[in-house]
Length: 329
Image 1 (cartoon, rainbow, N blue to C red):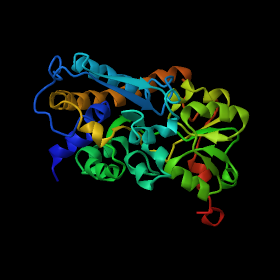
Image 2 (cartoon, rainbow, N blue to C red):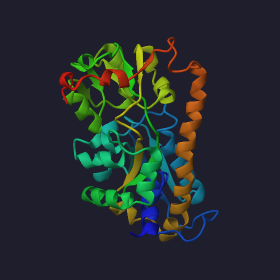
Image 3 (cartoon, rainbow, N blue to C red):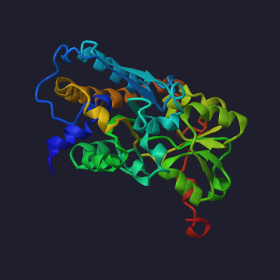
Image 4 (cartoon, helix red, strand yellow):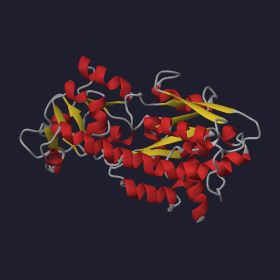
């Protein structure tokens, strides 16, 4: 296993993505004050699957754009666009493949319907933790294996964010037994949705920016998203009565930034060497640290311990501890 190659290809986190798009070479020198691009001006559009209100998930795209502009002296610019501005949230991968945009930031498990393998690079039930997944991607050949899969879609894939463990979601009714899951219309996508369907729920894959309306109108009975900070940003606490933990379907969620292989080979060589590695380093610390910081800020909204009777959150553990004969799976 070529560890250096994996690190350069997989990177840690996304900002990488787009720059990574510039190629997979290993940079051997630190970033220059301004990257020379031979007089060429490179302009890319980045389509995100997330709304601008999410300064963590969408914020990665802004960070990518800011870093690239600064590192190239304005010769390489990326303009981020929120979900729905250029294309639907779940249309970004097709948009990159078709050349409508140059790159995208998304959660791969959204495209579980295209191939279950999309979930492996993002989130699977009872899967790896944030540290384990980073180790697998960077040192355990995971980045190389995922790129072999993305080759089938003519995409260069680079991790672009890490949420860590997620919550169990918001519900309009209490979940006290497996029977309460039956018929539940829940916003949950990817591999987790197949498990919920097996135990009687009706899973639906809905973009983050449309979940609030679906809950408010009763189109769905429950939803899962990320965690308290991001969930409050989308207002789920205003339209759902109960908040459960933990989210066993996502021990971690990694977003990706993906350009096509064609775009990957179109960037000036100097840009590849001078921007790729510094961008990886920056985003590998920016995303996880920002997520931790935002979670700490969230505590002011909910100062009581989750186990307190005054807190509407409850654990999944007890409902799932039912005798096997009452459990459909």
